[in-house]
Amino acid sequence: MAESAIWFKDVHKYYGKVHALRGLNLDVKQGEVFGFLGPNGAGKTTSIRCMLDLIRPNQGEIRVMGFDPQANPQRVKALVGYLPGDLTLEGDFTPRRFFQYVRRLRENKRPWKDLLQMADRLGLSMDQKIKTLSQGNKQKVGLIQCFTSNIPLLLLDEPTLGLDPLMKQEVLNIIKEESQRGTTVFFSSHILSEVQKIADRVGIIRKGHLVEIAETDDLITRSITRATVLFADRVEKSSFGSLENVKFLRVNDDRLSYTLEVTGEMDALIKTLAKFPVIDLEINHPSLEEIFLNYYKDDESEV
Picture 1 (cartoon, rainbow, N blue to C red):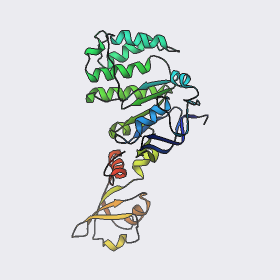
Picture 2: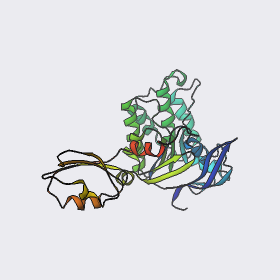
Picture 3: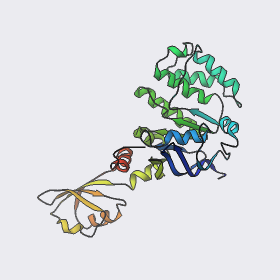
């Protein structure tokens, strides 16, 4: 566990009769960007709150930066920058006063100029009262307060919630830059295109279970792939008969063009195609969203 930023072992959490986390096991390495995927109710926010001892699991073990959140809650919180998914900011503070206040509470303070630059990048007014800000601008305040000190771990619950597309991209840039500084980033999201852009690894949670965990590129590469091939001469369908991982989606009447669905590795298909004169081959890997939806297609409802 020494190299783990976040470690879960057989964690269960109940809300009355609702079994929100069902034996969750998780290992996030220090320095990586980890995307935690799942629809609302899958267990993302519950997992994050357990990491910070905001709620306690009914069973199992958790370590955050090597510490038990239940035994050392103050130490864990000192090491974490946290953006909640249900962020509520009210009162007469301006962002400037709020950041100054939070910064005084924390160790290893970040240079003030860094916060000013971040506010400028996100187009946030530092001197307007927070209670008058839009929800999107409140989200920016919540994000920037995570950076008031130099911390080793960011826990971000839906970090781009309520932001327009340009601001979403800027937030992703900031997260990527923070990762390059060596910070571990754990963020939950249901916006899969964002996760695909910045996550080193992804975990897909379904009804409290971690059903898949993999490097982002690997998850896409080894999933279902669509291939369209155009031959110079007629090729019979039986030529592909021994390929168990290939499904025919479309076969032209002239037997010159095929559209195929390939599950897993492409090696066997490529070797088969090499026996024939191929004019063109188009490979389309699925998006992370297509992979994600495949895990949930049989669900009628979520926990």
